[in-house]
Length: 478
Image (tube, rainbow, N blue to C red; front, side, top):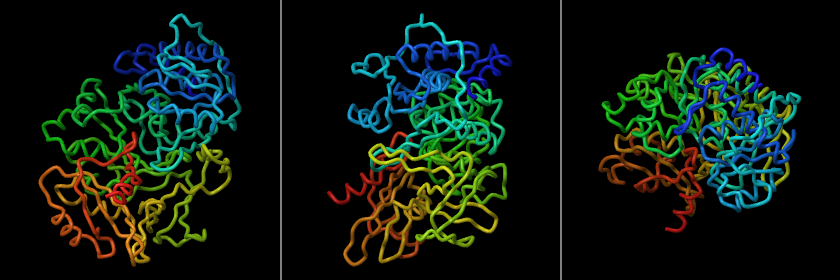
């Protein structure tokens, strides 16, 4: 499907840029040629249809080229963070039965490692493999923050649905220059890049790590009209001056995904940056679930919008009983984009086909069919028998003008079970006492933090999610 789409784009847009990074720019015919050569490189190392191959190279255009080449050969791709340690990679090789792993040539020292880049004289592969739609094509790793990694085994049919239906349901994405700086080793990053290629957009891959000011500079340098970011990055952008944000005037659309956003953050983004804002919600095992759009003023800004038409959704209690509309419980999903199975790297596969899948979010649906995320089931703080969702505490603290980032976690407490402790990042002088007073004005007593710690930054994953386990450990060791 992907290669066929690129062939069509090459016929229509032969002289236009398809894929670029800081070092190269490829037209559609050039992209096809490079994909064919990369496929020949993979095949020369003994890889055949159905083999599992890890892709662990830096975030640049060649990461996408390798993904396309592997899919062209009928391989099952496993995108991997190229900075992962030797022990982590060994666990992935065992857990996901990797036949080979593509790594930077300077790091290729062990059997089963395919060096990259390839020799430019590599002979191309001219034939395209078209496996059955029900065959797996990818194992997408979760960007979670605790425990051993797990992968979602995605079929070709589900992947096609995610990249076509999931790409245009929120808004027609064709006609853009998409700047990608989300980690390509995670589902959101690689899916967004592929989705834009399928739509015929120019995709520019930028390294992951840079500041908000550097993001603005990159948007200007590459004439980007569309970007995908996480809420943490949006908050950093909103700390810039209006003069600095003027560098984003060429942007026509911003897609934010990865975690919840507050209504005030959405309003600030639209008013200060001016681009259309789309807040997406999805999961690596399911793909896009729903979206919120600034172009639809009827959508409540504190919701994550409405589920897509193909998504079957329900809210259940701890016993699995379906709850009435408006009640809060565990979110469960079903639909054509659902993964075939979950593959824990150190456990038995969990079949998902024709099952209800729980991504682990606590949520509710209102009478209008809008979805509200309340928190993660694993992050719930139980204080005196009451469930406290960290996101509610964090949203209240983000209303304080000095707070730019926040995370709330639970700490063991005699008699209560747990109590709430918050960590905040500030951009102007503020005392913990001031922030506690702010919480008294915005939160009922059961949700108020017992302590607030001011820190320089929060520990986060490469995809921007807070490492709450590190914060809990910090509390216990203090």
